Image (cartoon, rainbow, N blue to C red; front, side):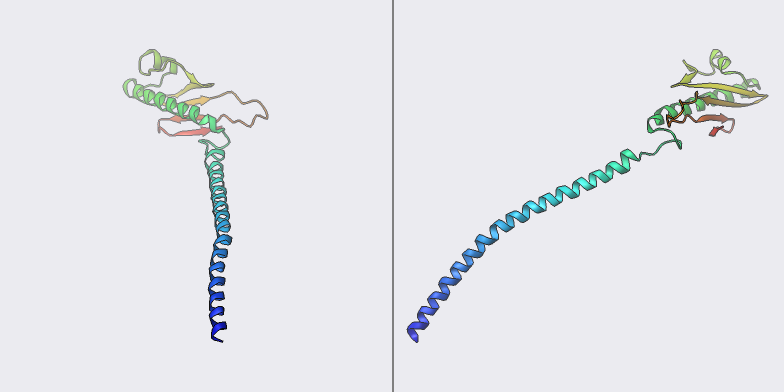
Length: 165
């Protein structure tokens, strides 16, 4: 028995050595495969995050006015700036002369420094009513079915710009 036990001990040792080596051989390709799959999953998650950011920030970009195109934001900001400038000049003129004057008179008297009386298709008009005024910015209507809307904007002595019909 002692001889058999010695051989049995050797066989167990040999089996355990081969078993360890066999585990290493089997585990190595699996780990490499797992790393590749993890990298692909990471790339997929990054792509989903980028697509979500694209949807939120690019496609659904807020507009300055409901129903207007995003590309009109710069133009409408310029129109609002012009309306404020005209209204401030009109208020200064009313304070000095106690009367409202037309846009041409504001420019010719030097009370308003504007080289043009419109912007990107918008035209400006000062409507006087005694010492009160309203400055209106209007754009011709967009072609039917174009989906673009040009809001008609106005400002008065309260210096609040609002959309009018």
